[in-house]
Image (cartoon, rainbow, N blue to C red; front, side):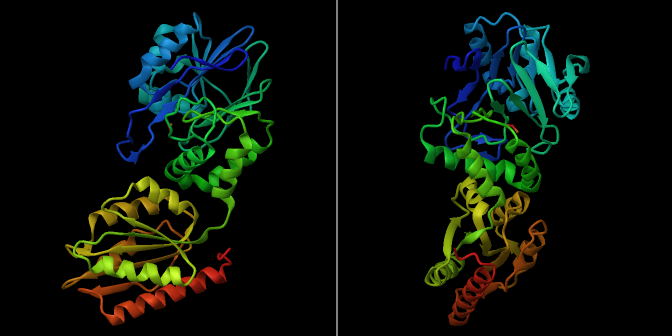
Length: 395
Ligand code: FEO
């Protein structure tokens, strides 16, 4: 895609990665992604805000060529992760006079990760400004969204916030701006769930800083630009601040049908009681969908058969992620089955240490579930309903 004009002398010069399907060899990208870089031409100086993933370095270089960019004075590195900084070495080679602008922490990471000489990088303090002539850039330190070195860049005269990963969405699209709000909402929520949610309490503080700014555009480094900033700011308010909802996430694996029978009965019992269930078969599910569901859920119930005494490995993977993502969950339980012996419940419980949840009585069947197991599931469903009512989550 060619460079695209955002405002007078401000251009999107990034790259759309339509075909990428995995990030960090971990996170599914069902809709691809983009690496957005922006060129800002002031009356005296020119700045490039972030670069692109090194796999698409030539796209950025071509975009700069198309705009006939002969000189770059500053390359602003909001974030050291390689999908935004990885083309810095090539940019510095092509524009040898350019200085990299970064937080002090980012300077040290860029030196470590990309071997950029320290003297090429000028550190900036929180709220420091940089003049491009008729345009002023303000740097806002925002550590832990989602690395410790991150900052946001605010272009004062044009009221544009360049927040890098924050507010982003993994979405490859030919739209420069958000047009299909439902699609972008889903992609941005997936992005928040997978990348930002573990830092929810820090993000609260950073959102307060953003609320002090007059913002006309939010131009993140992944996904389309927000011409209506309130669309994504209100979504983040909900994801970060709102209490969890009357939702049970039921994540399970079944090998021979016993755990599946427990799941079938339990889902019916919860729905009968007015509790919303989001059910995920971990042998098949997109873990991004599971992460999205965890943003709002009050309760997680994990279903597992017993494999070599412990939980199924796919369950281990999902529980590890749920624990690492630190969602707002308040309650947890475990259901499952075994043939001759099991420490499945203890091992899953040990993996939930990050979650501030009350553990509700697990239900584990020996072999195929019998009447007493189904009765225990009904009691667990009663208990979940009571807990959700006590915490005023029924909406
Ligand atoms: Fe899009 Fe944290 O990199």
